[in-house]
Image (cartoon, rainbow, N blue to C red):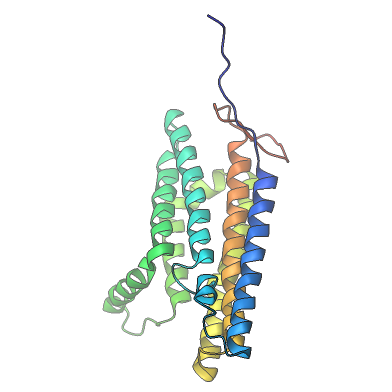
Length: 243
């Protein structure tokens, strides 16, 4: 019986992130084109095509694409968690926590679960601090700070410098869209309303930055995985050694 080699699939992290980035740009252009058509012509929906490509609308093509990108992040973190458990790594439970959070994040992107969670968390915090602010970015910052200090400070210190840098950049890009652009667009809508081209441009820019942040996270996870010898070979274009 002939010897058979295990099947390996070489995935270039750089090519994957470039392809995902190009798809994101294409979807953003489609969304902007649809909103421009809606607010500068008599075509409100263009036979249902405009809502279908609207980045700010649930169950649109860009939103479904975003859910798929987050799901890829979840799969990669879950794979790392499995490896860490096999190695009995000191921080294996932190990786599992990230995998669970990423899975819930995937559900949120398809169902807006976070809106309910933020509302409940604000209610809980106001039980202790009646003047706790209503802004989502404050709630997000408080939650992140609590989780990092209590569970992830040592974990973050243990990561390779390159991984920490990539994670920081991906978070910065994501939150630039999720917090800052979204906050600015909400203030803009409070003055000018939601039904105008300018507001929809701001929302599209914010959503695009969110997706780019997730894509950079995928790049970081692929690069981290490239240091492990597993049956499916993940090849990274910028190879390095973990300390």
